[in-house]
Length: 419
Ligand code: FES
Ligand SMILES: [Fe+2]
Image (cartoon, rainbow, N blue to C red):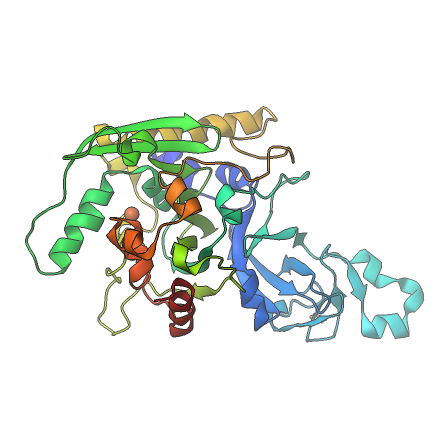
């Protein structure tokens, strides 16, 4: 349980809030590179700020205020030029550093005034990595965009999936360190959703949490499992500060504002050995729905992450942690909260919070705990994949994490797998 002040401290992310300040010290994925094959502008909202992400005609990305500093027109309806984004109302042009580089009428009528030199638009640095577009809204100097090891794995089909989840980011991230929910929310609830009453899945007997440089590892031992099982020896990763990493996919919980979260998934599916060498042309990106399409529909519950979304939104727009009752299964939840509270103090002392990466020598192919690393890197034959209890579902069927994968992505996936 948290008191109301701590609950607000950990959940509020707007400008000037301590937790918003902490999260702004990390690069956040906000879009996919392949989205810009079809468009050049995407409105984005992050940490309560309305912004415009664009790719200009020379291929440079920029992230600037949503509103033009002239008379506040919506720059998401602007148009890109060779260098920068132009407002569609009176043609002012801005570059990726926030400079105003043209004011068509002023430049002709009063060039000596150089009014444009007095104008700046809010702008933030943008980088691309692993098919994602990352933004940094924190204080300079910016750290490095993490180069996690799976980003350079070979022979895989990668897809990026977005969803907007209407609740606070922190309850989403608390799910990243909650091993027990797997048994109930994903295994047993799925049984009941199929109108079966059992059998229920093996129970958790022990769970352990360990902090490491880039987050926490959680490990589980369930009925019938030996202590040599990779879920007990290696486990899964609550990756700092707002991510779940399961070995073959990352899930970022990016705050849109205090009441909405952008879920960003980067999922790697290894092709069977028979399909090697496989080189992916482009990483597709899609947006999954969270609600049933029919009018009376509630939340979609058919896919793993949709089930998680049901839990998150069910906790309330901002979970009221003054009313919770934490048990021994929630040790990870407590550890994570405490780490964030300690990091807020570290920032107040002028230090970096946990897992901010600044050394280029370290930021190369950073290894994380991966239970199935050997299988994901070396690969399995088609027959071995089909027999594998976890990777088998990912390989053979529909996308298991989220509903709504578009047909063209499903087709590209099947083609990659040779199915
Ligand atoms: S409002 Fe943008 S140029 Fe006038
Ligand atoms: Fe889950």
